[in-house]
Amino acid sequence: MKKLLLLSALLIFACSSDDSTSDDNSNNSEPIIGVWNFYYYEYLDQDTNTWVSDIGSQGTYSQSFFENGELLFDFNNGSETYTGVWENLGNNIYRIETNKGYIDGVLFEEEVVVGNERILFYCDDNIMRWDFGYSDEPENDQQYMSKGSYNPQDCNEAPYNAN
Image (tube, rainbow, N blue to C red; front, top):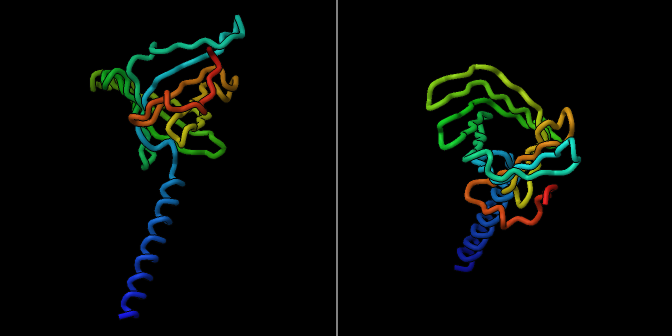
Protein backbone atom coordinates (compact mmCIF):
# COMPACT_ATOMS: atom_id res chain seq x y z
CA MET A 1 0.00 0.00 0.00
CA LYS A 2 2.87 2.38 0.84
CA LYS A 3 4.39 1.69 -2.58
CA LEU A 4 1.09 2.57 -4.26
CA LEU A 5 0.87 5.88 -2.34
CA LEU A 6 4.50 6.69 -3.15
CA LEU A 7 3.94 5.93 -6.84
CA SER A 8 0.79 8.11 -6.87
CA ALA A 9 2.66 10.99 -5.23
CA LEU A 10 5.47 10.71 -7.80
CA LEU A 11 2.96 10.74 -10.67
CA ILE A 12 1.21 13.82 -9.28
CA PHE A 13 4.55 15.59 -8.85
CA ALA A 14 5.61 14.65 -12.40
CA CYS A 15 2.33 15.93 -13.87
CA SER A 16 2.49 19.23 -12.00
CA SER A 17 6.07 19.63 -13.13
CA ASP A 18 5.01 19.12 -16.78
CA ASP A 19 2.26 21.74 -16.39
CA SER A 20 4.69 24.43 -15.27
CA THR A 21 6.95 23.69 -18.24
CA SER A 22 4.07 24.16 -20.67
CA ASP A 23 3.15 27.45 -18.92
CA ASP A 24 6.71 28.65 -19.35
CA ASN A 25 6.59 27.81 -23.06
CA SER A 26 3.36 29.75 -23.55
CA ASN A 27 4.98 32.83 -21.97
CA ASN A 28 7.73 32.70 -24.60
CA SER A 29 5.35 32.88 -27.57
CA GLU A 30 5.44 35.70 -30.09
CA PRO A 31 3.73 38.71 -28.42
CA ILE A 32 2.32 40.18 -31.65
CA ILE A 33 0.01 37.21 -32.30
CA GLY A 34 -3.61 38.10 -31.61
CA VAL A 35 -6.20 40.77 -32.31
CA TRP A 36 -5.20 44.35 -31.50
CA ASN A 37 -7.63 47.27 -31.17
CA PHE A 38 -6.63 50.87 -31.84
CA TYR A 39 -7.12 53.33 -28.98
CA TYR A 40 -4.56 56.14 -29.27
CA TYR A 41 -2.33 57.90 -31.81
CA GLU A 42 0.24 60.65 -31.35
CA TYR A 43 2.72 62.38 -33.64
CA LEU A 44 5.52 64.90 -33.41
CA ASP A 45 4.50 68.20 -35.02
CA GLN A 46 7.68 69.21 -36.85
CA ASP A 47 6.68 72.91 -36.98
CA THR A 48 6.17 73.33 -33.23
CA ASN A 49 8.37 70.41 -32.06
CA THR A 50 5.57 69.23 -29.76
CA TRP A 51 3.70 65.94 -29.50
CA VAL A 52 0.04 66.00 -30.53
CA SER A 53 -2.52 63.34 -29.63
CA ASP A 54 -5.17 62.29 -32.09
CA ILE A 55 -7.71 60.07 -30.39
CA GLY A 56 -10.46 58.62 -32.53
CA SER A 57 -9.58 59.99 -35.96
CA GLN A 58 -8.77 56.45 -37.07
CA GLY A 59 -12.35 55.25 -36.47
CA THR A 60 -12.77 51.60 -35.56
CA TYR A 61 -9.53 49.85 -36.42
CA SER A 62 -8.07 46.47 -35.54
CA GLN A 63 -5.04 44.46 -36.55
CA SER A 64 -4.89 40.67 -36.45
CA PHE A 65 -1.56 38.84 -36.53
CA PHE A 66 -1.76 35.08 -37.01
CA GLU A 67 0.71 32.34 -36.03
CA ASN A 68 1.20 31.37 -39.69
CA GLY A 69 2.68 34.82 -40.43
CA GLU A 70 -0.40 36.30 -42.07
CA LEU A 71 -2.10 39.53 -41.03
CA LEU A 72 -5.40 41.33 -41.48
CA PHE A 73 -5.96 45.05 -40.92
CA ASP A 74 -9.64 45.92 -40.49
CA PHE A 75 -11.04 49.47 -40.66
CA ASN A 76 -14.62 50.26 -39.61
CA ASN A 77 -15.77 46.70 -39.00
CA GLY A 78 -14.77 45.23 -42.34
CA SER A 79 -15.65 48.08 -44.67
CA GLU A 80 -11.95 48.41 -45.58
CA THR A 81 -9.44 45.61 -45.04
CA TYR A 82 -5.85 44.81 -45.96
CA THR A 83 -4.18 41.41 -46.00
CA GLY A 84 -0.52 40.54 -45.90
CA VAL A 85 2.26 38.88 -43.93
CA TRP A 86 4.48 39.73 -40.97
CA GLU A 87 7.87 38.57 -39.68
CA ASN A 88 9.79 39.29 -36.48
CA LEU A 89 13.29 40.40 -37.52
CA GLY A 90 14.51 40.69 -33.91
CA ASN A 91 15.31 43.71 -31.72
CA ASN A 92 11.64 44.82 -31.80
CA ILE A 93 11.74 45.27 -35.60
CA TYR A 94 8.93 43.65 -37.56
CA ARG A 95 8.66 43.30 -41.33
CA ILE A 96 5.06 44.17 -42.20
CA GLU A 97 3.90 43.54 -45.76
CA THR A 98 0.42 44.35 -46.98
CA ASN A 99 -0.47 43.07 -50.43
CA LYS A 100 -4.23 43.41 -51.03
CA GLY A 101 -6.84 45.98 -50.05
CA TYR A 102 -10.61 45.50 -50.08
CA ILE A 103 -13.55 47.87 -49.73
CA ASP A 104 -16.77 46.11 -48.74
CA GLY A 105 -15.19 42.81 -49.78
CA VAL A 106 -14.24 43.98 -53.29
CA LEU A 107 -10.56 44.07 -54.23
CA PHE A 108 -9.51 47.68 -54.88
CA GLU A 109 -5.75 47.49 -54.55
CA GLU A 110 -3.19 44.81 -55.22
CA GLU A 111 0.08 46.46 -54.35
CA VAL A 112 2.83 45.20 -52.08
CA VAL A 113 3.82 47.68 -49.38
CA VAL A 114 6.68 46.61 -47.11
CA GLY A 115 7.95 48.32 -43.98
CA ASN A 116 10.39 47.43 -41.24
CA GLU A 117 8.63 48.87 -38.22
CA ARG A 118 9.65 49.09 -34.58
CA ILE A 119 6.96 47.60 -32.36
CA LEU A 120 7.22 47.65 -28.57
CA PHE A 121 5.06 45.80 -26.04
CA TYR A 122 3.99 46.87 -22.54
CA CYS A 123 1.79 45.61 -19.70
CA ASP A 124 2.49 41.89 -20.05
CA ASP A 125 2.25 42.17 -23.87
CA ASN A 126 -1.27 43.63 -23.76
CA ILE A 127 -0.32 47.07 -25.12
CA MET A 128 1.49 47.48 -28.44
CA ARG A 129 3.17 50.71 -29.56
CA TRP A 130 3.91 50.85 -33.26
CA ASP A 131 6.53 53.46 -34.17
CA PHE A 132 5.72 54.45 -37.75
CA GLY A 133 8.51 55.99 -39.78
CA TYR A 134 11.11 54.44 -37.52
CA SER A 135 13.57 53.79 -40.34
CA ASP A 136 13.35 57.40 -41.57
CA GLU A 137 12.81 59.55 -38.50
CA PRO A 138 12.62 57.48 -35.32
CA GLU A 139 9.45 57.67 -33.26
CA ASN A 140 7.69 60.50 -35.13
CA ASP A 141 4.29 58.76 -35.29
CA GLN A 142 3.17 56.31 -32.63
CA GLN A 143 0.05 54.19 -32.68
CA TYR A 144 -1.12 52.41 -29.53
CA MET A 145 -3.27 49.29 -29.58
CA SER A 146 -4.62 47.00 -26.88
CA LYS A 147 -4.84 43.23 -27.19
CA GLY A 148 -8.31 41.71 -27.34
CA SER A 149 -10.56 43.06 -24.59
CA TYR A 150 -7.69 44.40 -22.46
CA ASN A 151 -8.50 47.83 -20.99
CA PRO A 152 -5.61 50.22 -21.79
CA GLN A 153 -6.47 52.24 -18.68
CA ASP A 154 -5.26 49.25 -16.63
CA CYS A 155 -1.73 49.89 -17.94
CA ASN A 156 0.59 52.48 -16.44
CA GLU A 157 3.78 51.32 -18.24
CA ALA A 158 3.10 52.55 -21.76
CA PRO A 159 5.00 55.79 -22.44
CA TYR A 160 2.99 58.58 -24.02
CA ASN A 161 4.60 61.76 -25.33
CA ALA A 162 1.55 64.04 -25.73
CA ASN A 163 -0.27 65.28 -22.65
